Image (cartoon, rainbow, N blue to C red):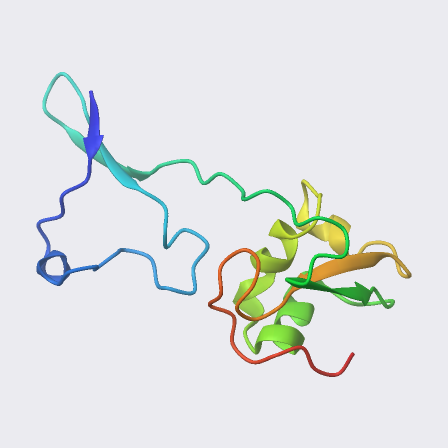
Amino acid sequence: MTEPYEGTGPLDAIPGAHPYPRSSRYHDAVIAVHRAADGTEVRYTERRLLPPLPDAGDEETAPHTVADGERPDLLAQRYFGDPSQWWRIADANPVLDPAELTDEPGREIDVPLPGGFPHGTAQGGLRGR
């Protein structure tokens, strides 16, 4: 049996409290509880579905041409001021493995604009292009 998680910890008394920080890709994910037949509870994060990719020419992304030696975390630091936000760039591109984003110098990838795709929590703006 699976049910939505209704927390009982100290932070759960705070409206909107969530086990993932706002900068996490899992912040908006649903936390659920699986109860086994013996009563054991297992809390888990439900699967996170990706939003649809923006259309070509979408104003919520900007193109970036990959240079030799770039990595997704370095791009996230450059564009958002936070290397842990690499997942925003991965979500904006049709890749299964984030390493595919930067494994081919000269490839053009999409970088979400602050306030745009997938949801607007990015810090800073596009700089140093």
